[in-house]
Amino acid sequence: MKFSIYRFDPEQDAKPYMQTFDQPVGVNDHMLLDVILRIKEQDNTLTIRKSCREGVCGSDAININGRNGLACITRVRDLKEPVILRPLPSFPVIRDLVVDMTRFYAQYASVKPWLINDDPPPERERLQSPEERDRLDGLYECILCGCCTSQCPSSWWNPEKFVGPAGLVQADRFIADSRDRATKARLDDLNDVYRLFRCRSIMNCTEVCPKGLAPSRAIESIRLNLLKEAL
Amino acid sequence: MNRSLGGLTPWLIQRLSAVLMLAFIGFVLAHFLVDPPASYEGWRSWAGEPGVGIAACLFSVALLAHAWVGLRDVTLDYVKPLATRITVLTLIALALLGTGLWIFRILWLGRA
Image (cartoon, rainbow over all chains, first blue to last red; front, side, top):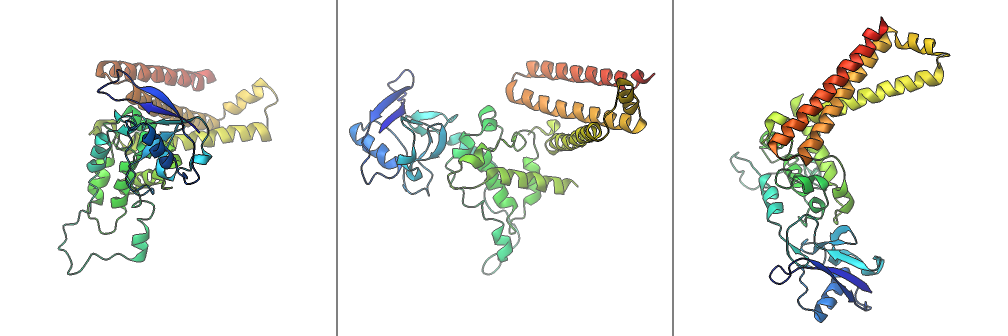
């Protein structure tokens, strides 16, 4: 199978280039990551981030034939040749397919992704009804791989100011949490022309999420909560 | 924080104005399908009815508000230097204001 892979080593290369590899796909090479690791056996300078290799850690998010996804859960035989692999669009490249996620994590941290509740802690735990718990479904599963934010044009134009779909999913996860007491402060923080309202419902985020989540729905839910608060 | 540029309010204006415009377009299309005017005079007298005039006026206000929020958003995305941004926003505001006056002239003064 033919692969065209983005290569860039800032210590050696003046600018990035695409390198072609012809890699036979073995019977046990099911996922794209398996084949990338075979290519790495040929050329061990090829750099990729990976960890769990089963779509749980989100480390190996890359751009595959123009579409962001996780290499470890992308079936290699389904891909059109030549398979073009690039690092996540709009993220600064550290080397080859590895990107710098600093700005992404800073936006994530900016929504205070932790439970805020100053009530005296109960003896055992803060209970939720099954219905209250259900509201977190579709939100808590985010693995912060960055596929959505990297494919979002609003994040491309305003990466420092727009929280981005991944961060907003996390924001909604805590807004929707019945145990959280900072809902109003969270909503006020997002009621801003840049932080939330740069989203134009382009919905690339929902289209590419490798976990099948819908960040655009979370964003809509935050807007509706803001509207309810305003009325 | 950019509170001065608004968060929810412009977004809401854009949605409500869209609904209003859609309703007016539906109303006009329905009228032309169900009871099409036979001549230019027929169309003019229909357009001159007070109800239609008020609806057209509301439509125009919605259109201008909708256009302002949309163009302002595009400007915020693409025009970063402050001086250029203010210039572009001013030009857009003037163009929309001019369009508004032009519509007013057609809707009100055109009746005379």
